[in-house]
Length: 339
Image 1 (cartoon, rainbow, N blue to C red):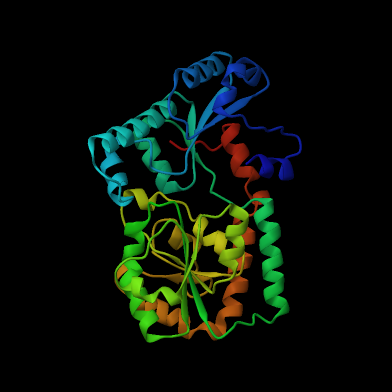
Image 2: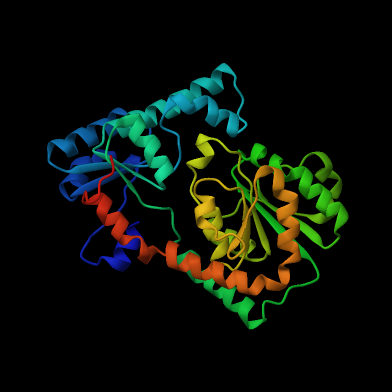
């Protein structure tokens, strides 16, 4: 957000600070018109920061991009993320979500990444909310532009293989991946051209364990190297369970791929189905149709260049940092409040 404001709103100064710097809270407050607290668990230090800032007439907003503030959904979050339910785990998750929610309640308003999540926040705390979507940064754009230029220069040439990519990141997507695991195993058995690339902590199970020669494994990546690995596959796979928690998630897995000229096949969650123009910039696959949709995407690879170019254009139009300044300034200066 700081980068976006610096590019599009040169009259606005923006900077960030960490929890470790709260001992200088008075200096931070004196230099700010608005303070945005990002996803922070309640501590007395954060409580003092927020109370002092509000007493001095500064606006304090809370920023969060996940449904991790309302303990009414803790059981759903733990189940979706395939977490253990020991006493220790329950204490951790209920404690973390309660503390995040308490920090939110102390603020003047909330910044969320989509309308679905914004409705959940309003229902939880009753505060005004603003939507600022997740978006790309300049370093991602620069590297992705180079990847796309190389693809264009080659005439979008591919080798004889078809690369499917699953970019899980954190070790909490086992149940999401399980939606497509059997389908992928079946397609890999039937089509020797297919290669599955897995990035992150996910451990393949079941029938996929016998296909090690068809799997490419990479550890968790920084956000720059992640773009390179995404850009090397034809189809980016984004399966999601269908519940309130997953519908609150942002569409970043779609636009991170699109900006590199990689097409996504995704579950039709609230944000994902809005980020994909079906059959034009990617494909939507309900849980019961993944095999059908993947086969259609593979069959249409002759049309890949046109679709990839459309996906790149859509990502540039909607998710470049310069496109977000209006939404950010609306939030930090209080315009167009929701709720």
